[in-house]
Amino acid sequence: MLQKLSPRKVLPFAVVGFVATVGLFMLPAAAQAARTQAPHAQAAQTDAVHTQTAHTAVKTEPVHTQSSNPDVGYGVPPGTPGSPISYYLPPSSYIAPGHILFEQNCSSCHGSEATGSAIAPDLQGLGAGTVDFWVGTGRMPLANAAESAVQKPPRFTNKQTLEIAAFVNSLHTPEPGLPQIPIVDLSRGDVSTGFQLFVLNCAACHTITGSGDAIADNNYAPSLHTATATQAAEALRTGPGNMPRFGPGTLTDQQITDIIAYVKSYIQHPVNHGGVGLGGVGPVAEGFVALLIGVGGLMLVAYWLGDRTAA
Image 1: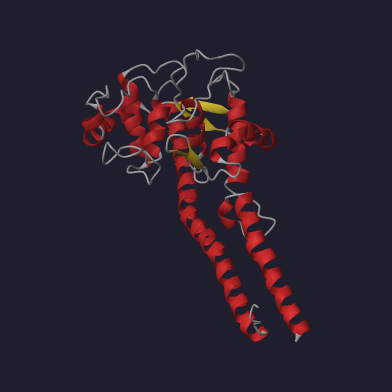
Image 2: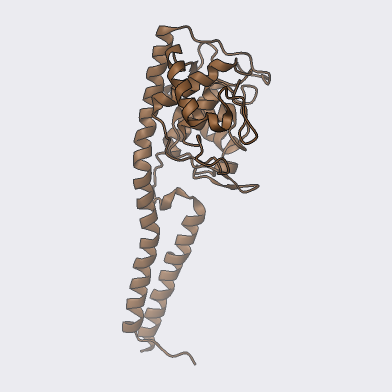
């Protein structure tokens, strides 16, 4: 026979367990909010710097016309007049300081002319957008070539990142289809269409909430919660790491803009109608909390009421 517990003995344990469980889920959410507040501010500043530099490039020198992409099947090539995404190169005055920064921080692995080595790939012909993404997201440079290139606080300022991109871009004409640095006009994005395209093309790896997830071969699809519009466009067009490259034959500039508009609104600024966001990890966490707190709490209340009735 199980020993009966009096309500006075059961209730304190129930209250302590309930409070501890709620704290377990609320503290990570609060910590996540604190961690993402600064990156969000930095993301807005990064987009502003890219926009300002784009205007400078247009005023000081002609913008290079993007080569036609070999995988064009429908839609329009990147940078077509009237497109919601414009592409630019940093001014030529950035090349010389970029050369110095590259020599000091990148040449030990990639070589002085960015031709690559046994431990690092050739960067020539990859385009300014590719270099801007890898350096601007902190994935490069690596302190140790054996490390995995994961997102981390960038080592360089936004201007220094553009200087490195300008130098590498000057070494070789970019391969067809690899873009310059994009500026996305989010006001022309359709969030509803972006949601549909995100579910179809992105959610399988980044999850429906954009929190990121583990994928095959010990790789990881990163969180989208701190990505700038420029970084998102660069990733979609260049396909970093295991990510597929979405050329204009797959997604047009307008469709890219729609996806980014959705990410910048509902992914990065979700509306939590139910209250606590639980870190934005989706329905699995919500179901777990509902079972643990909701059903568990009801069972404790039912046991307490049954004990009072029996008494």
